Amino acid sequence: MAAALLVFSACDICELGPVEPDKTMLSPEGEFVAPVLLEVGDITIDGNNSAEAVTFLWSAADFGAPVQIAYNLYFARDGKTALAGTSRTNKLTLSKADVNGILVNSLGVKANDAADVEAYVEASVNGTEVKSVRSTNSVAFNVQTFKAKLNSLFICGQFQNGWDINSAPEFWETGGGTKIYKILIDYLAQGTITPGEDQGFKILTQRKWDGDYWGYSGLTPSWDCPENNDKNFQFGAAAQNIYLLTVNLSKKTISAEGIDALSLIGDFDESAGWSNDVDLVYDCVRNIWTAGPVTFSGGKTDFLIRYDHAWSKKLGGATTASEDVEGGFELVSGGDNMKVPSDGTYMMKIHGNRTPMVIVMEKQ
Image (tube, rainbow, N blue to C red):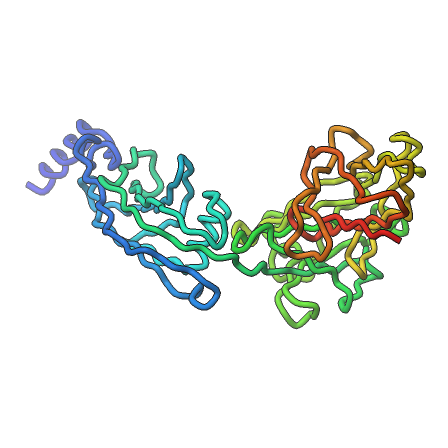
C-alpha cells in the first residue's frame, strides 16, 4: 500500500508540474482588495514641534494568499507626487520635520506657508512583479510648513593644510530636511598636491575625530557604501583640480563632479572686455573662493562665473538675496549676466558650501 501511494503521489506531482505561487496561489488581478486610507487631521509644523510624530493608517490589502505586502505612502499636490515612506505594516509614522521636508523639497510648498495636500497608499506583493493596487481613496489635509534649520557636515583631508581638523570646511544641506549636502573644493590645493599622492579626505559630523565620520567601506571600497572606516576617499592619479561633492545621507552615497577651473569673466579691466578669465582661488580655512581685486569702469558692470572657462557652464542671475550669507546673492546655473552696483574695485567671493552657491561682491 505504501509503495502504491508513493507511485501515485510521484505521478501526480509529475503531471501537475512545479508550483509557482505568484501565478497559482494569488487571486486574479481583478479580485485584489486594495487598502483604504484613514482620514488624518490638519498638520501644523514649527520649530518647536518638528520632532512630533504623525501616523498614517490604512486597512490591509488582500492578494488572495498569505504573502508579504509592501505599502508605499505618497503625498500629492498640484500634479506633483512624492514618496513619503514605505512600510510592511498597516501604518507609517513620520516626524513633522520629515513631512515638512517632503512638502518643501519635493512638492514645491513654500516654507512658512499653508498648503492642501493629498495622501494615498499603494500595496504590492513584496519582491515580485505582481501588479500593485492603489488605495480606493485619497485623504486630503492641510499642512502649515516652516523654514527648517539647515544641518551641516564637515570635510577634512589632505587638500586643506594637511588634515587640519580644526579648520575642516563646513557645508550645508541643499534644503532643510533633504539630507543632501554639497560643497565645492579645490582637491589638489592649487597644485601643491600631485594626483596619485595621498590626497584623500573624510566626511565628518563634527570638527573632531571622536564623532561620526565616513570613509571607504572596509569590505567593498566604494563611494556607494561609505561607513565609519579608516580608509580615505580618493580620486587617485586621474584626480581633477576641483570637485563638487554631493553627500546623500538618505541613500548613503557620495558622488562627485570634476571641474578644471572656476573663473570670473566680464566687463572689468582685468578681463579685457570678456576676453580673459580670472580664476577664483579656494581658501580652505575661510571656506570661500575669491577672485580680485578686479576693477569695473566706464559704466560697464556686467560679469559671469564659469566652470572650465566654458560658456555652456556659466553661473549668473544673482538677483535673489541669500538668507544665510550676509550681503550675498544666490547664483543660478545658466543665469543672465550679473552686475556690480557701480564702478569701482571689487573682491568677488563665492560660498561653494551653500545650495545655491552664493556670491558676495565686496567693494574695496
